[in-house]
Length: 31
Image: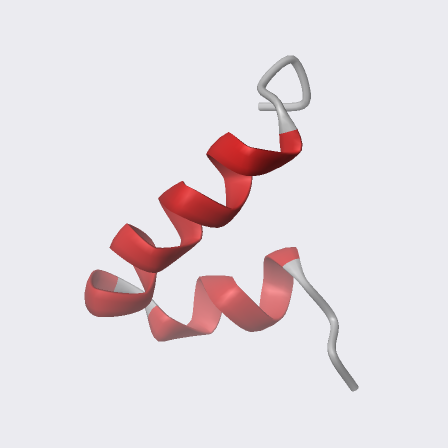
């Protein structure tokens, strides 16, 4: 998970956002 580049994380987040919108908040604590 951490071995992947920051770009990959954002790209994956977009995919997960569709299936698991909660992951976006868990991965990137905007608040």
